[in-house]
Length: 352
Image 1 (tube, one colour):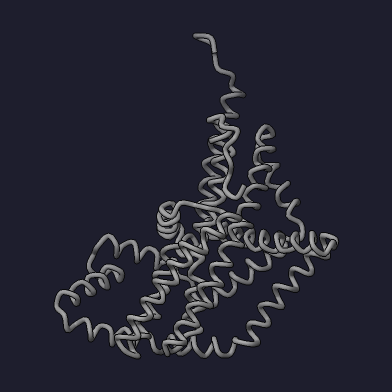
Image 2 (cartoon, rainbow, N blue to C red):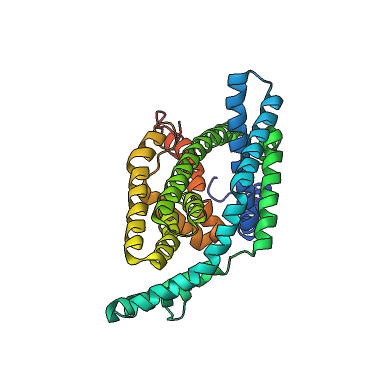
């Protein structure tokens, strides 16, 4: 603008409107972050279902609609068969687990209290996570605990996520096209590419994660059964599900198994600890590298701090969805920053 010229009022007003709109959009995203995480969960379900439907369509030469119906029936059949075969036993063992764990923890504390140093360490940790000693860790734990959902609320939200996932699966283009209308025209092609690459990366990440979860659940269940640990099926299922939250989840899931093994005997607890450790090493050093050749490879440090950040900023759902969110963020960073800003056209997005 030339020196001394009067700025165009229309241009100034439009810029102010853009800034205000951006601020309101950010405030809305913060206020609705829980709902947006549920939407992201529905997107994950849709990505998985469409990936399965695509594989069926390629092999069975069905129509897209027919393949999606078959994919849905396969998922329902697998879940129904698992519930029919093991549902009653798993439910009984989960009930046993919830009843036995407090007694196992009390027994563990009694053994620890015999050693003054160990007792003080455990007391400090327990106080830190309960927030009773005023530590920063306690404050974080209390903040995370504030987001804990009731069982009824969690069930309702799970139902909504599944229904939303079905809607996204049936007609994803309608939602993508609707979202793109809110973006500037010059960026729509890049955003569409990033969304497609994100779906591809999430599909491969889901496949790798499900394989790891199945391996861990089966291996731990068989191992704990061989050791005579009670509620072995529930503990194995818990350990498998914990793989969805990498690094931190498996460690936390191992604690109940070791505590229940301690009720059988100290030697059983030692063997259970060794079982968890060996299973984790086999999964991390043998299974994961083979899976990552056809899936998504992310640095462990990035996953660790991503899970912590997700838990502190967004609560339990943030920790649960931290890894797939990192996958999507990494794709957008590569396409918009590495390629668009830095000009590295050969950079590959995760899962490419």
